[in-house]
Image 1 (tube, rainbow over the protein chains, first blue to last red):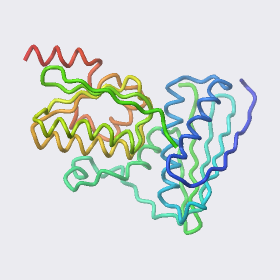
Image 2 (image 1 turned 90 degrees about the vertical axis):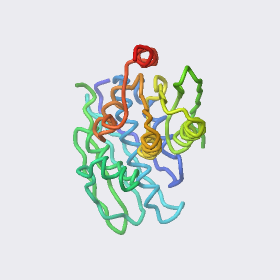
Image 3 (image 1 turned 135 degrees about the vertical axis):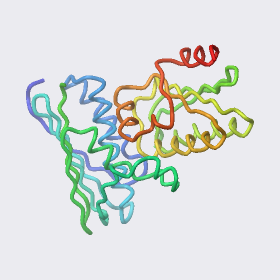
Length: 139
Length: 117
C-alpha cells in the first residue's frame, strides 16, 4: 500500500498493555505488507517504549498515546505518556561485564530502541515522556 | 492480560533443551528461569534455549536470561541460544550477550559438537 495513513491508540498504563500494540502491528503488517523481520523490529521497539511508560507512570489512570504513521516504506511511531518522567541516562556504554558484576540486569530499553531503530529521540520531564521512533520498512 | 507464551523442556544427555513459543516478557522469562534453575540445582549446567517460535522479547525478559547466564557461570556452565530471529540476534549482539553465551543454528548442532568433544 502506497497511501500514507495513521493509526492512533490510547492505552491504559497497565502491565502487559504492550500486547495491544503488538497485535495492532500484526494487523497493520497485513495491510501495509512489510517483512516479518521488520514486524519483529517494530514490535520490540514499541514494546520497549510502552513498558518504559508503564514503569514511570504515576498511577494506572495514566494513559499512553501511541501513533503509527505509515508513509510509503517508512514507519514513524510516537509514544507519549503522562507519567512523572525520568532522567535520561545513556547506558549504552555500560558494558555487560560491569552490569553482570554488579547484578544490574535492567535498563536496556533505551539502548535497544536506539540500536534497532533508524532514528530515535526521547524527551522526558515531570509531565511525561515522548518517544519518537523511525523505522525504514525495506532494507 | 495473557500473551501466548508456552514452554517445553527435555533433558538430552547432560543438556537441558528449553523450547519456547511466543512473547518473552517478565512472565515468559520467569517461566524459563524456573525450569533452568530447577535443573541447575540438580547439577545440569548445559542449557540450550531454542527460540524458533519466539520472535519478540523485551528488556525485562532479557534481564532474566542474563540472570540465568550469571547463574550458569557460577557452575562453569553454558547457555546456548538457537534458532534466533535476526532481530533477537541483533539485540543480543548489541548487548554483548554472546561474550557470555553461545549461539548456534540448531539444537542438533550443539548436541553433535558436545558429542564430538
